[in-house]
Length: 419
Image (cartoon, rainbow, N blue to C red; front, side):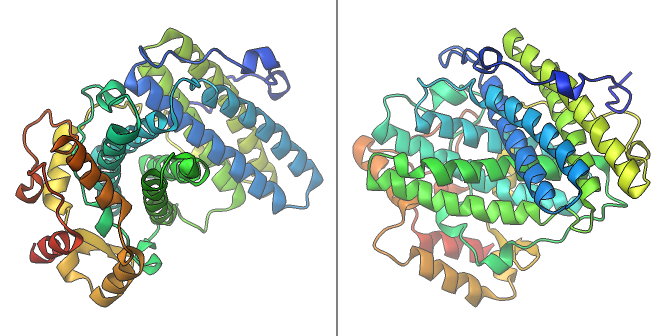
């Protein structure tokens, strides 16, 4: 039998408050931690930050004092969960090491969901941003060559390749071209709703992370790279956030948030290899079952709807992070030349307004250098080649197989227009 969070008994909300000694947990060992244990922690930190921000916004948009008290109590518990998850990251990991973990998560989380996604449009959205995050991993790994004694393979192991995706230099598009269609909340598959909620939270957390740590890089090259990729994360949050049906009520959204947290903690729990971290996932799952019950009760009280009737009898199959090397390579081969065009993702040559893309590109890339290009040039100048992990053979696109030169923005754009 599967897991149905509507029928489980969670920990009462008034018993969820933890002491400081419970919250301030021993961080993991960065040398021995499994890469997917690290990325699960990054993911659930993002899920909990989204939960807190959502509950704050709901709280600010109601004048019902009883409701505000329930939201405040639930939010306090979510905040404590976030502290436990985020404080598991050790101080011994540098900002750049953590960043490599963020981008590994982005790659394998997005690819895992895209391979399972039942809605073709949402799948296309996942595939589109997947190979952009894949390229970010490559850029940061090359920054590490210059500024950190570690190398990316010490963090990602052999689970995720490091090689060019859609080059960051051509990812920058006009804001109009990041706004996507939304699914219909009445007809969408539950898995689609969970995927959109999860990827939006994960990308939002990456955006927030770069907003706060990007200026900690030691030199202008690193600071510039965090700025440039941070702006792509803004695009990604617009891209993914647009997919959720904005017509959902606050109570519908609250139930979906809590249901998704149950799903994600359950997925983490059943796939976790570290017993100590697994116990944390199990404890948080028990908390979230109770948060879901509270959300269900609120929906019944204020809208007269039974949330349990809106969801399947058990959670979908767990979301398990795993290598996706061949899938990522195939999407690079098939879709590197795509761009955003209003609500569509299309081959660059088919864009209805190519001048808008070209004008925006000139505005952001028209200065004396582009950080995402320069970081590779610097790595080549230092070592006569860029840094890569290509366990599955040479790059799927011939243009990117050479490791001693960086294709220019003009060359990449011409390649994309020729496909």
